[in-house]
Length: 466
Image (cartoon, rainbow, N blue to C red; front, top):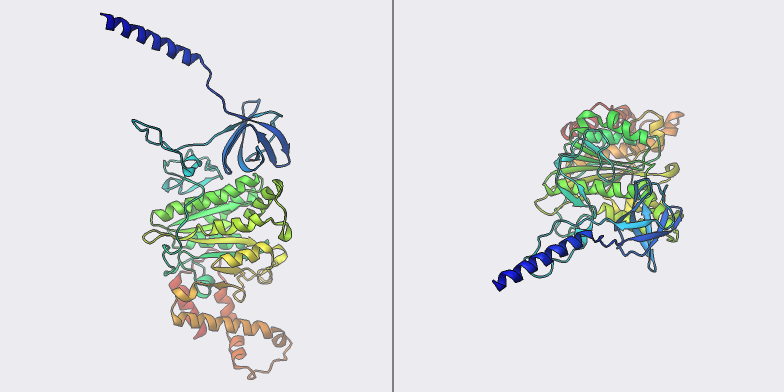
């Protein structure tokens, strides 16, 4: 009897405690904005790691999302993802770290959170095929939400270089000049170096439509919004889009979102590679990615170096590029093309120079060729594929070398030929180059609607030299 009375008292007491707890407002952990200068917001009263995500509620019910890009003493330096209109002095700052669901232990303390558990996760996988999304994974095509439950963090995973599969097979990109003269291997990373208006977007679209890759991932970083729509509808087309994922972070979004867009496109490609698929990653452009990092670095006080680019820019480029390539043995591959904008066709631009050093080859588009109607305007003299000798036969290499020699010999003497100063017979190789000039030009040019697979490209190369 006495035990029942004690039990009832305890039950009543616990019920009262629950009611009191329900009335207590939860503890609010928040910082405050103390300064906004240009692109950077300064927050105090909250501790977060570099790369941590947070948001600032606005008085109209909206919010500004931001990322921690640095700190100064106890203050955090925040870079907003959107415009800071509506942010007031003293506005609250909340962390929005997302933790993966971890099993709760029956006894003892909960498991300690890892860095990857705190990182934000973004959708990846087959549910993205045929879709156009922004840098945050939000659909832009009006086709509804992404039908996919697979997610991954943006930072990717580091692959031991000794565990990577070697480049042993060719990647057919459907462009005759590249297949025959600059053969690309699965898992190779190449740069497409070009100024404005020389046809790089058209060439990228041709590769996306005609490649034999299983999946195409396109990252449109820092381009004009009009070009994004044109690339998807006119250049890529419905056929190319069906097996593609497009990540668009145009020029009017924040520098932070442009960086995130490039990382997200790479993360999507990594997800397909893990499935064992061969992926073609097209990043347009690596230069805009570098400019976005420069914008952020200068805003938080990093000193400028070469041509105004801070040192962190040249650290970010290899970190992004090295995530692509072949996966571990048994996985798929990511063959990547990064466009590099050359100011005034200057091939010694610091970003172009850095990109050449970290990529496995470069394809240079020549403005003079483009102005003469030669498309694609690939300059085979200045272009090179560093993996070609490992994936092609000796006969193929000899033929490609011979055609390049004939092409170069004609260019070196075209002024003499034009004025009639060259005497036939004085240079046997030049005589052959003059004879086959039209055939070589026709071989190197290709209509946008023409697909030239690897076998046809090599047969055509043999015919030109026969």
